[in-house]
Amino acid sequence: MIHDWPKSRALLRRAEQSLPGGVSSPFRAKAPVPLYFQDGSGPRLRDVDGNEYIDYCLAWGPMILGYRHPALVEAMRAQADKPMDYGAQHDLEYLVAEKIQSMVPCAERVVFTSSGTEAVQLVHRLARAFSGRERILKFEGHYHGWVDGALLSYKPTAEQVGDLERPNVVLGSKGQVKNAADNTLVAPWNRIEVLERILARSGNEVAAVMMEPVLMNGGGILPKPSYLAAVRDLTRRHGCLLIFDEVITGFRLGPGGAQERYGVTPDLATFGKAIGGGATLSAVAGRADLLLQIAGGGVAFGGSFNGNPPALAAAKATLEELTRDGGAALRDANRHGEALRRGIVDRGRKHGVPVLASGVGAAFAVHFTEKESLEDYRDTFADDRERLRRFLYRALQEGIYIVPDGRFYLSAVHGEREVEQTLEALDRVFASIDERAMTTAQERH
Image 1: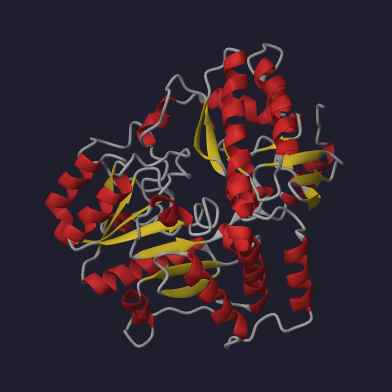
Image 2: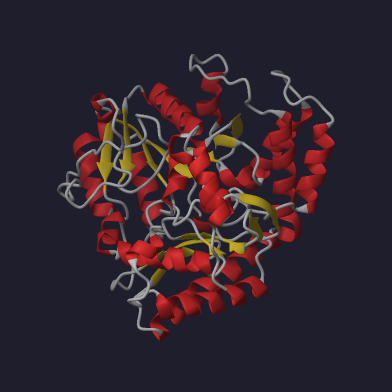
């Protein structure tokens, strides 16, 4: 199975005349070939050239129920006959909020927004207002949205990061104001002794410590045993809030997200992607005293599309499916993902390709590295990026669609058949990614 993409290439050239780079999000342009899709069902997609793919991108994470899930389709169809938005209250707001409260340990109150980036802006503001402090401590390689105050030290290079004990705060974009870094501290993740020393120096300035509880945006890196609990203890000792960015881990690692899986409850958490099964929705959940600051406590917050009915109808259907039978759908997704993750490593070793698949079942990332494990973002500097690029291109030719940085997301409808077919295809990929005939010129065509 060797796919080609003449129609997608032609449509991209057309789109480049109206959209910057021909795409609606620049991250998408990093794909080996930016594809145009016309349909999808379950865990599979079909592009405009008629090629079918087993999809591990899931729209960069949101499609936790796959495509055209009957429960989601029914919910959206029923909502389509009603107003798209009221800019006022409706039953779905409290029904979905109550559902999240029943699932998420930290959710004493819930607030809805439209994107993860907006949710991050809100938790930063809430933390600063509550503490009277201005600095947010974040970790290298962790992604919390693209606004100036959050896009810091996301993908710094080895030359930029600086000393491990005093990491540089690295801007993530041209046009970003330099003083965006003034109210941010950066630490290496998974190194509790370094964090302890940083907080000993500056903890009285820090409003909150924020992290992805599993570092998915920086390579699918798991927290060390007891690390999250140790950070929780440190934040309490220094009077800082603890914020989990669960935009990826929420409603994917389990019904209650990473905080349920690891038994560590943050003060605030952001959610997105899987929460709406593909609808445009994110949320903030956390302690009541923190969130009530937006209800007469002086913290400004708003949005015409916050809690809009179509998004919440999708969320209600999605969360009901994910909690059905005690969370069986997510258990299956993580079980199948673990089989795939182990199988990828085995196929790589079979062909003499050093590969590591790091993360959890339903969300992991592939690294071409001699390392046997990854502990923090700096470990990814040893990755062979060129080999990853070739792997992604060949996988696409074989009908396996992967996030452009090597991440795999599994939905609740990926099954044993998809895992078996994927491993068969990736066996061919590993056999060929280092062949001389696979030239750089061909791949970049």
